[in-house]
Length: 300
Ligand SMILES: C[C@](O)(CO)[C@H](O)COP(=O)(O)OP(=O)(O)OC[C@H]1O[C@@H](n2ccc(N)nc2=O)[C@H](O)[C@@H]1O
Ligand SMILES: Nc1ncnc2c1ncn2[C@@H]1O[C@H](COP(=O)(O)OP(=O)(O)OP(=O)(O)O)[C@@H](O)[C@H]1O
Image (cartoon, rainbow, N blue to C red; front, side, top):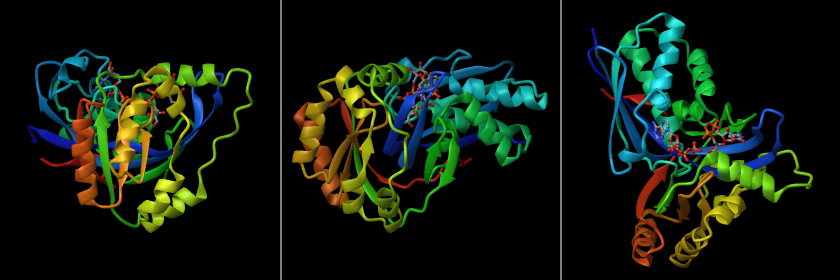
């Protein structure tokens, strides 16, 4: 029997995040163009006496270790559906910033699900894994599939997208996190009384992705949550300006923030932007990486 399974799962950036008005259930319909990036968490699952979660990494102190952890919730839901005792130790090696708008918790949910499915030999069909992911959170299905995808509904209904090349990114981590529900609430406050149009994916942006053309992608990225994130965290404007001045083709808030994302024309410029951003004192840390990245993958 397999004794330990480790799954690697990527972070994401939203190259388009079009947000509709609030739905009766409190969620918002989206046209959400996800791109997986080469920043990863690893989830390791090992048989144990009872369900236990541990976490290591720079942001580990902010991660809940009880049954609210998305990794624990994923294991519990798979165990419930297949009548398995959820007696496992889930260890998260965390490299994705917490509450950073890069789907870190979602990555751990998708990773734990695939790891438990492999360890227990439940062999759940892909559709069922995606269904459990959607139950855990709007971003979780994308963490499982990776690559690039258009998310509609609340972001959980995915259509895979073609990506014709490698994009070079710099991510700047902020001094503190932002709560995703708080950013959506701020979006609602800022649009109170206004007619919010139906969210629609930009064909120009999908074409830029398909061509792998960074210049065209830079001209077409958009994030409807950015004004709300900036309203709650005004200092992010300084980080965006510092990255633009350092040579980024475009700068934007990643999802609900506060991580900021900078698209570079090549790997060398990306490293330069990273150094300049760090020296600017407008962020806590920087990471230079590429996209697309594969989805949740068993690595051991
Ligand atoms: C901002 C994004 O990261 C962009 O990919 C996602 O839309 C957020 O996805 P997530 O963190 O998985 O969010 P969920 O756990 O599903 O929802 C958390 C909260 O965010 C808000 N939320 C989320 C997704 C959505 N389409 N509309 C919303 O209004 C709701 O207040 C919800 O209670
Ligand atoms: N495995 C996990 N890792 C991190 N946070 C978790 C995890 N499970 C639950 N959480 C809770 O979720 C909150 C949001 O964390 P997360 O890192 O997923 O935010 P995020 O990356 O901004 O999410 P998204 O980009 O999907 O909106 C945390 O503050 C924490 O309380």
